[in-house]
Image 1 (tube, protein in one colour):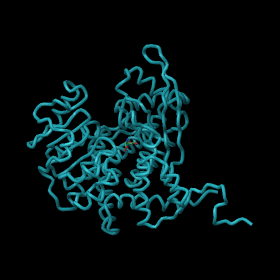
Image 2: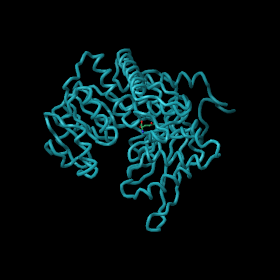
Image 3: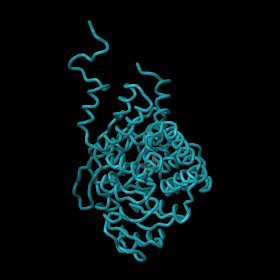
Image 4: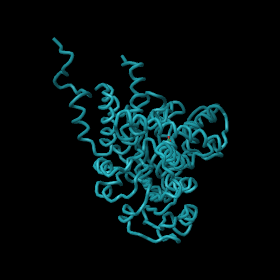
Length: 444
Ligand code: GLU
């Protein structure tokens, strides 16, 4: 007789203990993402089946493809697209080009996208992809061939209503236009324009949205503003220390300064700067794109400081907007800010969280703080679908509303569950996801 409750010997079940064993074998970043939603799953008491479904991605596509280099050599590349979950809508998320890209990192980033889109109330699921390369090591024409061949290799695994890539670290609007053009060439000639929304984050000329470029930075400023307003905190002249001066950092700096805050320290891969009287983001951006040759080290009007001292700088707001695992337990003990706004994905290590909590530091979590990018991606997708063009003022007003609603929602959930804003963000997203999972039921 078959026992229906105990898995038969030799069978692998994704619920219960075997899943935990499987995850323990995975390296840390995906495990971090899973443990974050597991805490919220405990608070909500969600079923083992739903935990199992959300603990692993739905699909993992790995493509190996050849590209001819400028000198005639052929180099092989490995590209990834991990589709975590599409319960709420088409898979959505960026394409990252960085030497650190591997299947574990992409899995974690795809998982975070599912929670990010759910929390922002967007009709999208979560995905992420990328190639393990340093884009700076290739010429523009080599990069174009890499992007086009990657898009070709992915084929029908992406699609305007199926899985919609966007920029992320190491990619930009030009990358997206090459992807869009390649995808369009692969389909019917009559669909050239209807398939434009296969990617978002395009140049405005090629179908992008006003405000998409600054969306992630602008979104984090709106989230901080909504949080401070609800707490009765005046942000005027509050001192900001910012790590990372890529797309998120640059626009985070510009929008925070515009909102009245003072940028007192900036760090990137080339060095760290400090000026208690304030650093002008416009000057820094100009320096980085000219004399600084891609980095902030050596910029005028600020004193160079040790990279490690950056974490000890006197400030009120800390914005990690670079890469994962930057706020270690050691650094957490030295941070002077009272609020951390996570512009990057996964910048705070699990071991640092209790230290920050004990020290009374509020963390506005990544899945909320950097959701502005994917939110304006959704606006771009809607505009492409409708053949419409929205003004920057319209995009900004709608983005402000999404970020404010999501921030207030997780603040009230945090009060209800007496938990951190991170746990509250996952609770809010999980409630939305499990409601639909329950209503749709299990197939077959
Ligand atoms: N790469 C961004 C993120 O991590 C944007 C994703 C998108 O616009 O789809 O949220």
